Image (cartoon, rainbow, N blue to C red; front, side):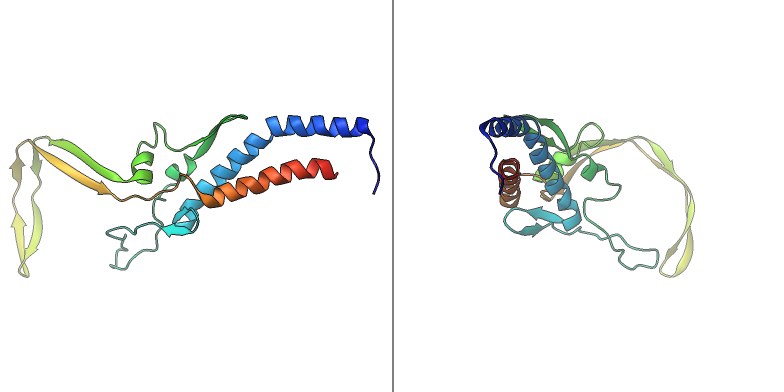
Length: 185
């Protein structure tokens, strides 16, 4: 094994210091972002073990009445793609989800109840044919007056971001690798 001089050791230590300050926080942030996005693929959050998300109350159905294969919290990918690394430096690594185009990110991650008052404007229901007790009946046009109703929607907790033991272990591995690699070369 070749022996390096003090001058070379000093330059390697300076490079290690600069890499730790500039590159390491971004690597750690990217690892966190990848871990949180993997929750959507795994259909659950991994702390020490994978905790699966609660399934939908009504699974989507095909036209023939069969259950469609589906993923939870992933329709168009907006929520998963909103998980992003926004700030990284030596003191702070910040990964966020949501934004103006995905305002529902927090309620899905934490769960809760949405209480809302909905106003329905006056309108007319169109006439249409219907079946009642096997007989064909024509339903006449009807006028609906304006009204207000209260809705309570319960959103179950489907955590995709948060404290994770597995993420912490991955970050420790990245830090160890970043410390050892430059000194071994």
